[in-house]
Image (cartoon, rainbow, N blue to C red; front, side, top):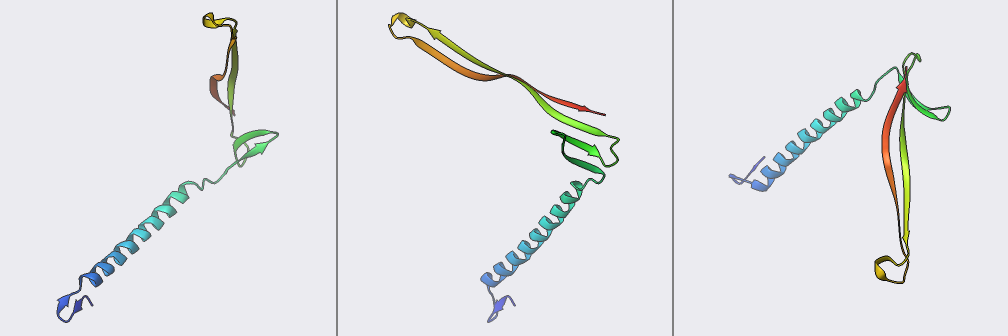
Amino acid sequence: MFRTRGRLNPKRWTRALSDRVRGTAFERVLRDADRRSQLLQAEGFTAGYNNGKFIIQSADGNFLLHPWLQFQFRSTTNARDNAGGGDAPNAKAGNAVAWLAPVWTGR
């Protein structure tokens, strides 16, 4: 298969080897994807919106997790007349999130 008139044919050998390696790599990727997808299939839990809130709960309703964010937004404006000895007014404005806190409630 890899010989042409008694000599090794490097092109055929390289092509066959790369096909074999490519096939095993593909099989490994498929096995890894199957294994990882099994981890994501947690049974008995549901998630979604209920009464305008995002919730994660068990199928029987005994356990409930309600994650949400609380944050404070701040806007500032500084206006100065004759700043730096010039005649033109100087104004600077900016916005920032003063603080952000993740919160979880549940039962």
